[in-house]
Length: 189
Image (cartoon, rainbow, N blue to C red):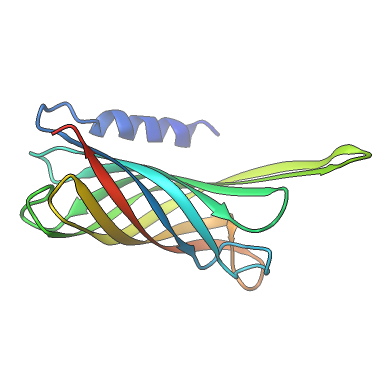
């Protein structure tokens, strides 16, 4: 049962991987802020993140597959938090990929967050080691700019579900609200 979400991500990647010679492929990076991620300042205080993403789009199809990964800078020693996403974006403009200067989009997908705790002490060695993986639904809205080989973008994402990484003010895991900006570099055509 634990492998089911991973199999779903692989199936999405295979289903939407470009098979057309006119397919577009882009790689890029993003940075942003999640208002609900716990940090060294407490729960629900927010944290910055950096990540990378790829985009697979077909010129004859108005959908774009976007796998991505983000690493959160929580400021807490011995704690690592990251999020992996498999999203499908739906551009709104008539020039869905590459013809428009401004292309708004909406999307949805699978968000997987992972929190890893590993506390080491010099005398006792590894005292506490634990991790937790949570799954949820992503809803996305954003826009990309430019029609050339470099495309800046901005977006907002909500990841629904009970995620330990996204702690709200009462300390309960909850949805994550994040805002990001980045650059995509077209590879090939």
